[in-house]
Image 1 (cartoon, rainbow, N blue to C red):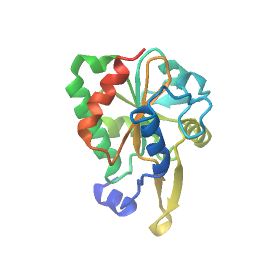
Image 2: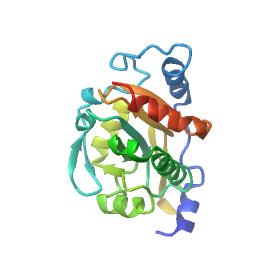
Image 3: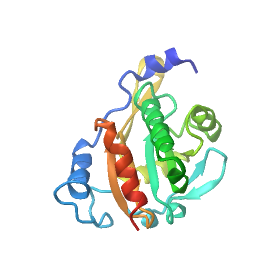
Image 4: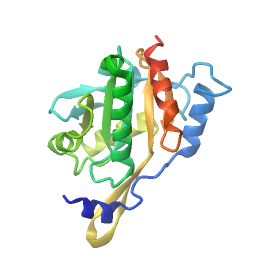
Length: 208
């Protein structure tokens, strides 16, 4: 799977679908309406992790439920291994943030959830994540499991055909942050100034 082929397949593969949702999430969580949101009843915000019924397979082949992440703050990002730009850039950013956080980051769950379960096997995810921080764990599942997970996170995933019968995947771009109790905290938007990222992560680290 060459970089050239990925670039041909994906030129614009990841888009900020659901930008209105991201903006609403910022306003309610980090902006003027910053009271703790009830994402269990708000269709615009992700469900609490403890309310998600999904189970996925990590890049070491272990079955893990979203509810298993409760008890530690969680950083989650949707992407796919054939992504030409946004996904590797965001994973590089996350690696830098984890390095900056140092030992604080050891208490985080850091999840890279595939938007392309047909190609992203546990082995493919393990190979893809090799250059990034080892605390980032890849997750895949059946198409049905990924669809259920995306719905719980309020993420849009759209498979789009490209040249010669191949396809790419458009999906919501943004890093989701959850508190240790599993409640939704906020989003680090792909287009947001990256200097805000580590303070946002520290905030969920310090919240019950």
